Amino acid sequence: MVARQTTDFSERGDLALIDEIDQLAAHVGQAREAVGRIIFGQDRVIDETLVTLLSGGHLLLIGVPGLGKTKLVETLSKVFGLDERRVQFTPDLMPADILGSEVLEETETGRRLFRFVQGPVFCQLLMADEINRASPRTQSALLQAMQEHRVSVAGHYHPLPTPFHVLATQNPLEQEGTYPLPEAQLDRFLMQVDVEYPDVQAERRVLLATTGPVEETPVRVMDGAQLLEAQRLIRHVPVGESVVEAILELVRSGRPETSSLAEVTAHVGWGPGPRASQALMRAVRARAVIHGRLAPSLDDIIALAHPVLRHRMALTFTARAEGIGIGDIIDRLVAQIR
Image (cartoon, rainbow, N blue to C red; front, side):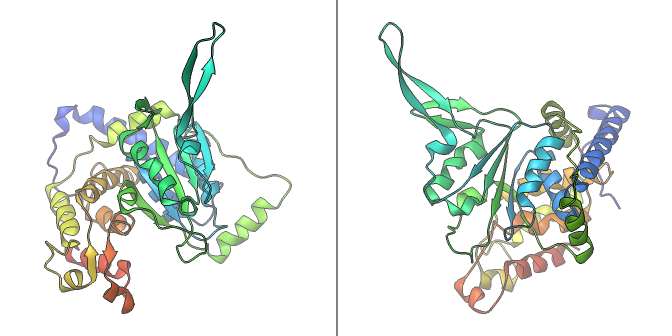
């Protein structure tokens, strides 16, 4: 059941808004279908990725190598008609390799001046491949770009194109040669999506589709301007008061300082901040539209609680020693709002 709405459709016109949402749902359905023809057995990952793009956020994809994370990002860039750049993060990568740098040039008259040469971050969809293989200094070079959609080089600001999204892939921290992302940068990712192994039928489809004489190519469904319009429309989707209260209860219950749950106060070192509430509010709106509904429900919160919260919380040493996972804590938080 859809929760009671706090925003009246009449602000923009009932029929006009409903028609726009229906059209957007149809376009997103086509995009989902186009991606699904290339990426097999990852329906949940595709849905959560689409939610992130429609919400205007950045995405962190975590999984072992070979699960199609890079292929997913490349497919999305073609389906949405976005200008894409790819950066392979390595231990020797420097911030200037991402942002760009100023070079000294000499004109025909002999005058010397600096010219800014843009780095790969100046695009609409930046794929940061294996982001946790670079040093923390290089990882942090993306922080301003992700938050402000601009970069500062040599004291000058340079705006980034719109829309701008960072889709980063990350190997599990247990693997050699990886560095944990700074907490401040993790918080800038709208969601963390864990990519798991496909089931046997999906892996069979991968085997047959990618080793034959012809491999299917992605079909363009939208462009950057249409994606920006979709993100604007998502902000007009009304949210019920019960959904707002559930988001607040879920996020605030995850903080040791404000939680009434013994599991949280005993096992959580630090919990999600207000940016988690904002991310959930944007994400549940987008998920409702993707599923053809005019307003989000509690089911949307439950479905998105893990990808929105799991990278914004940290366990205590005691909790890790006892084998308690962050997923167990989020499950307990979700149980409160069911």
